[in-house]
Each structure stands twice: as C-alpha cells, then as structure tokens.
Length: 218
Ligand SMILES: [Fe+2]
Image (cartoon, rainbow, N blue to C red):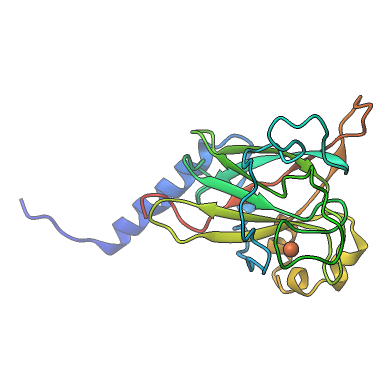
C-alpha cells in the first residue's frame, strides 16, 4: 500500500497533540500559557561567584547572621511552550541586597550587605519546580524592583529574564519593564509578593512560572 502525504491530516494531528497536552496540565488553561518575555541580562551578572551558590540567599555558607531585608520565599515552575514541566533546567537568580548593591565589583555606590548571597542556583526536578529563599528586591538608582533570572539548559543558549513586584509605582517609570510592549507578557513577569499568613517575621511568598518558547524535543 502506498503512503499518501496529506497536509491537512498532519495539521489535524498536531492540533490534537496540542489539546491533549493542555488537558494533562491541571489548573493551566490555554489562555494562561503566556510565553515569558526574554529580557536583557543587564551589566551585573556576578563577575565573581559567591562562596555559596545554593538556593538560600539569606545565609552565606553556615554563617550565624542572616541578610537584612524582607524575607521572601520565591518559587515557580519552568515550563515548555505546551505547559509541560522542564526538568534539569538550571535556574539562576541574582539581585541587589537591601542597600541596592549587586555582588559585582563594578557596583560600589553603597556598602554591600556581606550576609546577602546576591546569587543562587537551583536545578529543576521532574516537576519543573524551583525554590529560593531571598529578599524582596529594593529600588536602586535607575531601576524599579526586580530579580534577574537566567535559565541554562543543555543544547540551548543561556536565556535571561527579570520579574517585577506587582503594585510597585516605579514600574511605570522603568525603561526595561516598559520595553515589554505586550500587556499579557508584561503581566506574566509582574508578580505578587504576598505576606504569608501567620508569619510573625512578616515573611513573603512570591510565585513566578517561566514559560519557555520551545519544547525540549524541538
Ligand atoms: Fe538589575
């Protein structure tokens, strides 16, 4: 029997795969799958790594003193363009300390908090989840509050973005933030830093899901 190539049938199958994939992701609706916009790495990716690069940015190694700032539990998932979790993605974050200073030798505009790690890493497991304990980012000259993210995966170039604090008035005056023209894309990187109920220390929780523009097989 001869195999006949039929373009419309191939199209139909692809459509089926798409809806089947969505059906397997609980709580994720098609309209929520907004690709996270890629944004500039900026000039302050650490030029020297801290002594400790784990996912707890509040404590450097086994120091007895912790960083100053509003403690934030930051988590989320790294997803592919169909909403499937991506495993073995190395998630890196870096941000300023409570004085607005990066872990970078070129940033000398204020005293750096030696107890703040400034940078951390987390490798996703099969759930695609990552987790960091850090501080709510503060303002520094020229920028609104933000946390930098880099995603490193085998066979892909380093991918960078930034997340922002919902309700921060400075967002509207930030050139990089406003450079994200699509309102849905902008919304996807603007996240709540919400007080955790019952936390006497006033700790916050923030969730930032990252939707990459590809599937791992692609
Ligand atoms: Fe920055």
